[in-house]
Length: 149
Image (cartoon, rainbow, N blue to C red; front, side, top):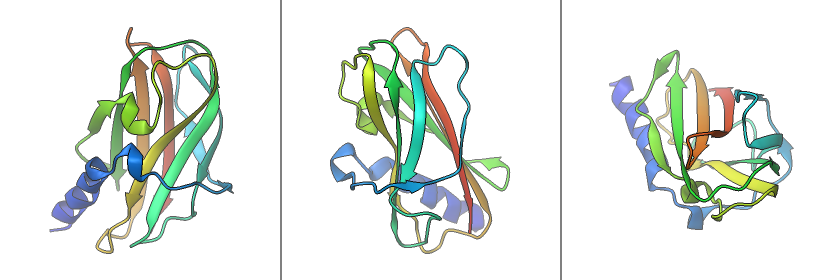
């Protein structure tokens, strides 16, 4: 039963589009840069509209930094890990993260998470890994955020 609840929780992310993105305020959060030395985005900060996340409320998390190179298109992979178990990954084009393509060197802001946390989300530790790759499969960025209910 709780796996089904978690699956419903994970699938809510697929229904959110870049048009629904809310303004993110300057709330600092704990995060880990999981990129390799070849990343194309130097992450400077990760912000959220509220922290820690709360059930039944919209959570929007953005990553800001400096793009080192241009890229024309690419994909992202978002994986939610609950108590050590990976839920089905969510993948899509970079446009889903609010990136206007083509992207050029300079400031870049990416919305990595924009969803309402369901009331039925079970208690426990959550980690969200988001990584993005460009047209030549080079890594643009990888970031991990985590929280606990």
